[in-house]
Image (tube, rainbow, N blue to C red; front, side):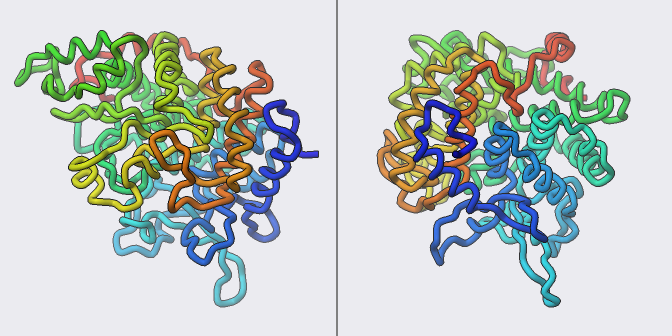
Length: 478
């Protein structure tokens, strides 16, 4: 019997089929499972889908940890911690503290197994991954929560990796904001989509990674203070400046422009025309969400699903924001949810926007892939966030509808179309994080009171620090 068959949302055949794909995705190093490949589809054109992606493995880790299988997650954590950017072999080596987007196991000239990592030197577009190290911190914390093993985070190589990552992400930047300035294509949306600057998904991951790091460090560690202060500044910035609801939109539409100084009504110099008509209609009745990006004279109001859902489960969203977000999701269920998963972004970039912002990317055509494609992997963060808000019934209904369809379609990577009804035209089948998301979500929703190893509880000291953080952007950075 499959260990994931405990959930009433999955029948035995579905859970066994999903488990078979997850087990088959195992990547071995010296006889140990150290990760899962991105997809198991037998195709000569799989390219890097036969590698283990750090961000993808977070979903596999959730599925394993929820049923008590912790060893593979420990092996993964140790393997990634042992990798160093100077092994990339690129002309300009990646910065110390950066972790690879993916890795694979190969044999060297002497027949010995070795790990080959991709820090961006082999990636499409040659963009380094900003999010991998943050996902690694979250996986390590989730492993510690699920296993009770606090020794791993204190061990020499893993502790050194934690410190390298935190020191790297806390370095001064070429700007004066608590958020991270990142290039296009440096996260799950790993192709040009106009999300350079301060995309929501990365900022929420930064928040979550810093919270994980704070829990993993000893209280008296020299990095604990800087991490805490950065979290307070980041939390205030995201909650105040990224949040959109009807009230906030009406304020932005009346903003003065071309202001100078520190205490401003419109520090980002946003023009009223930055709010498109569809957003005003979307928010006219109820609900709210965190905007997709914020920069000088730029407010990207597209709905970025992963960042919004993670904002709830990681404690970034206030209880009021979390409720409003799920009000919006339920009200616009036809737009965002389907029986195959959830939209990654909404709405699609079309016409001239698609041409200019994606560079005419043929994989990101409207309503496909990252450009408003429907992703089954989002069932996992949906389930995690829904539990926090007390909307487990909504997530359970979506998972129960999706699982049979995904199994029948052989677990695609993503779906196309405004309502997610068509298998993605370039979608891989037997996609590992598709099956892992279904398994992880089903177990989470079976018992809403059971611990979620990836979720964060409310931190009263942090909440007080956020409330006391300086309101103007210039003075927020530690």
